[in-house]
Image (cartoon, rainbow, N blue to C red; front, side, top):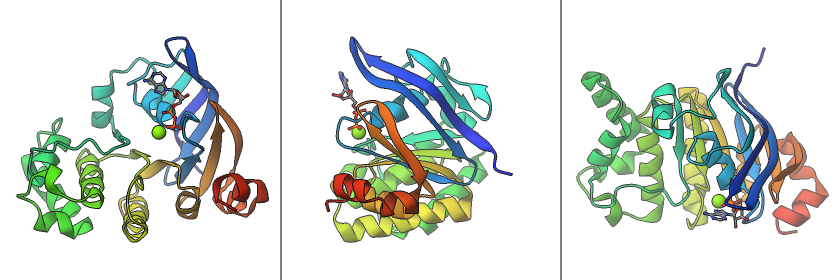
Length: 239
Ligand SMILES: Nc1ncnc2c1ncn2[C@@H]1O[C@H](COP(=O)(O)OP(=O)(O)O)[C@@H](O)[C@H]1O
Ligand SMILES: [Mg+2]
């Protein structure tokens, strides 16, 4: 039977007097890839930031592995296996690839294991092995996204929150990146909540999807069902 690893119940969030989330209910089962799609400004990033405590929910609950984490400090969560790759990557541009990866392991003390995980992420992203001594900021957008994801994997996540990994990348790079996202899910057993404006690639990667409009979930279904829905195709797939 499926096991819920992350669960939002009627979550609201505000920026001052602006209400960005108006009652979001969603769940991620262990082993799933679930995608949140929606137009710019729908509340996708706010949802992820509320999950990881950067924004405090003004109502509702966020549960991770059954525990309410609304009041958890954001820097505690990677140590518990919940890690976000934020929109715009936010790697450390002056640090080398290796140094960026070390930052991902900041809460860990197991030196030998950390070294092994660095090799593991280099196997997953061979280009990063070639660039290991290069400053993160000197790399291409696709390589920086890979570095951001690799750094998150150094926390040994059970749940990865990915915010617009495709943003600003060429289609061929996006396709490659999403193959690796599937590998991370399948081979490493990481459950993934994937936020994307690129609904096509997101729904082709995910098991299920949620459609967000102005802070509300307006539709949720199997990803394939959403992909075949004429309204979704018209609104989000450019038809
Ligand atoms: N720092 C902020 N201050 C005020 N309003 C914000 C801020 N960030 C986002 N918003 C507003 O909250 C809503 C949701 O934004 P966001 O979660 O970033 O949407 P998405 O990621 O789907 O594009 C939008 O109306 C946006 O203008
Ligand atoms: Mg966003």
